[in-house]
Amino acid sequence: MTGVTSRPGGPAWDRPGQRGPDHGADQVAEPDYDTQPLAAIRHDTSWPLTADRDNGPARPYDPNRPANQFRNRGADGGPGPDRGPRPERGPGLERGPGPGADRPRGASEPPARTGGRGPRPPGSPRRRWRGPLLGLVGFAAIVAVGAFLLYRSLFAVPDYDGPGQGDVIVQVQAGDTTSAIATELARENVVRSARAFTAAAAEDESRARSVQPGYYRLRLQMSGEDAVELILDPKSRVGQLEIRGGVQLDDTRGADGSVTPGVLSLISRATCTTLNGASTCLSSDQLGNAMATTPPAQLGVPGWALADVTKADPRRRLEGLIAPGRYDVRPGSSAQEVLRTLVAASVTQYEALGITAAPEQGRYSPYQLLVIASLVEKEGITPDFGKISQVLYNRLSTRTRLELDSTVNYPLDLQALRTSTADRTRPGPYNSYLNYGLPPTPIGAPGQRAIQAMLHPEPGPWLFFVRCQKDGTSCFATTLPQHQDNVRIAMAAGAF
Image (cartoon, rainbow, N blue to C red):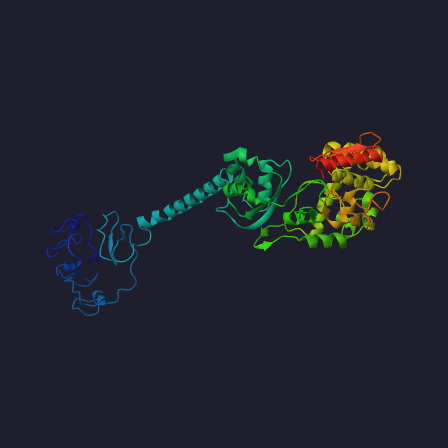
């Protein structure tokens, strides 16, 4: 088979203007199309020479001639004979880069064509290295992501970003460490992880340790740094309640018209905050209704006080059962929950002081001892508690009316040292000028020192006492004439 390859090859063709080997005199070397414009090459009628592979001499390339006219032509330009199937290539031939061209095996590669000749054939060197390179890049990306995740899990601290949103109430228990607080904050979704809080708290460890037990209004999904700052802000502390000795359930009026908040009002204030835009305040009326309508046992009243509390006026049945002290009330709780929590905590205090195992229990029940302690609290100052307690026991043991102004003023919600004649003659269960024995309930919240004085009175024969000095000190007497002398001394001193 003879013919001209469609893409000349060989070393001679790499040098423009030189003849290729083994070709006729009319054949010229391929122009350097790498340096000449493609349009100029195409209009060069001397290149390339075209011929059918088996039919006649080569002819100059005609750009207007249809492509199929280059094939299967005879010597006269007519259709050539049917050549039949293409013979198999021998071992010395291999397919050249151009269509329909055979070249000896081992011949040098012809120069590549440029100018948009189509995609590189499959199996070319560029395609051979593209696949492995993409695989290597993908593997490197997977390794990088895995390394990042491993680093974050081992070293990076999971944390939220920013001051958070919404409100949540979180409790700090007595004795909680910074780690315990952090664990609780993570459980409530205040911080993303306990480490986020502890890491931020470590930057100011002394302040972080100053967090007190109680309830705090924080936000959800806060950064550790913002959570530390907010929990250290005094305004974040909510639900604080302090009850002083002698305070009774209802508000009371002083002789000068001033009003002293009662236990119910103090509890109401402690429940107040804003949680997600809504108020959590419980009013005094709501607390009073819960006290009057809820069975005492469901409010935490202990068995040793249950019978007396059940018989008492429902509006006063919890008097004295909420001990003086500092408490933490959870805002958002119901009135029953708040009262039950306070009563249970107070009962624990009373029992720890020994009110249920007192030496006087043979004569008085624990509840009656609580009533006596409330009278001691109301009638004098702390240095005189022991003597006042003894006076009360002496009068009760001799069946003498107590004649205490504090019991007369109690149902009147009045805080005064003296009582009027009309009040002393008005019948009622709390009028100790008319009734023998103890009033039906305590008349206020007895503190620890009053309870200790009730449990351990100072021995003495006294039956009378009166406030005789402006600082509240009382003068004690055994007989009525001695007592009347003390009253004149007190009036001269301006004690009342």
